[in-house]
Image (cartoon, rainbow, N blue to C red; front, side):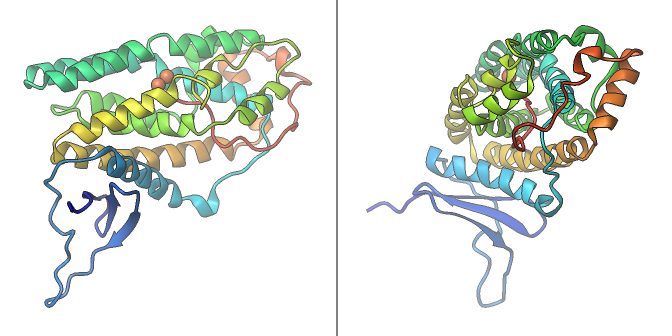
Length: 300
Ligand SMILES: [Fe+2]
Ligand SMILES: [Fe+2]
């Protein structure tokens, strides 16, 4: 009987993620001795499987978030926080199609039409998602178009920069790891998370278009599945790079989200009003702590 495929990727100086196609996954700390050399010291070279690839990618996200688990902010959700999150969602979406097409063009030049074709499809799928966030802001009575021009939430800036940089690289395979990280986390959001946000919004306001689309109810689930299958089909060195970037993106995302979530409601309102140059009357009196903590702000 054939042995199950085992994949492994070194994500830090001394930690590797090991995953089997049968679903086992663990973190391995390098521990070579003269008698027992480390079996995972050399990079993997074999073919991937979807069963092992999903665990490598999700292991990378878990490891990235584990770094800040102890100090992860867990505030009650507020409408001001949701407005900031929507502005962040706009910024992480607005350049995605252009960036992905840039990376696709590079893979075309490199003689990798299959990677280019995958990225082109992703660019089409992501088109218009920035407008969902703007519509949600409008539904809340917030002048989103004006706000996004002058305001990028501080914790979101490093994420946007990371994606810009990855897509501009000579070999931009890492952009797949970044996208996976954002989409996988979005796909974890449940219907109950959306209901909690809806409960914060004014009665009758349809302000969760972006969130619905970037949750377990929307297209994010199929985007994640397609990416896992595609990554599993890549050569080993590409799979290694994608998993390593998924880990780095998770670190940046965890730090960035925490930075935003640690702000008080008054601080967030103040930032929004300063960016706009005038008060935000539609938020006055609506900011409350109804519901419980959101698992993550919208992104992707
Ligand atoms: Fe997506
Ligand atoms: Fe999206």
